[in-house]
Image (cartoon, rainbow, N blue to C red; front, side):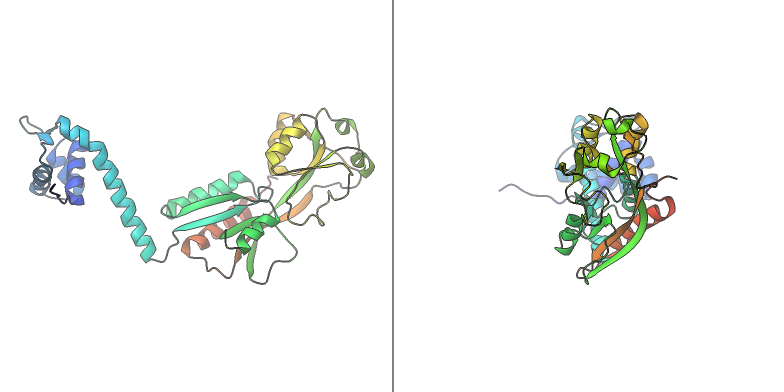
Length: 305
């Protein structure tokens, strides 16, 4: 029967430190241990594995071929130990193992969301995060069904009784078309002008009856993403209401243009809400995530002035 041996993490730490620093004394200083302790840990590791890990014939120990072969695996094991210890501490402290966020891209500049998540990761690196692309009402449905912990959505007039929400910012919608579209040549665009051309709409907006683009054309194509919408507008196909934070790069590059209208002189403003269900209590990570996004949007806003 094949014998098994137990390798202590301290042995692996001593081996890795000596390999990295080039000497047992330097490894001892980096670990805050006596040199004799580090030497003993490495010697015991060699006895337990039956391998010679360091050549001690010179002034300083040098990794043998066997030692070099094991070094990568040792570092992987030490990283796994560190993650295990961090996650154990987090779970004992009541920290969530994972969070799921349903994101309506029309409600938030994704660059700002990434900045918020970067700050969140610095504090809660052991928490696994899933981001779901969910426009409008589908984001609220995911939260209601327990499939998402937090939703980032355009503000709705009424939420279910078991929902909590926080207004955190605002965004603007602009009327746009491709530079080559006939609407772009008009000094002022009327409702009748829009009625005569193809309207591109995102199919899952939060409250279709409340959005300004309703019934402005009898020719409507429904799309699931703004990236597809921008591609079609750039090609000169149709017009759309789009969030300024999504349309801005295409406007600045000259691919699409903002249409001047005789019925709306300023961009359509919408509020951005964070939503979550009272049925599922948010832990420290979920609460921090809400605070991070709230801070980002309330101090910077989803739209640049």
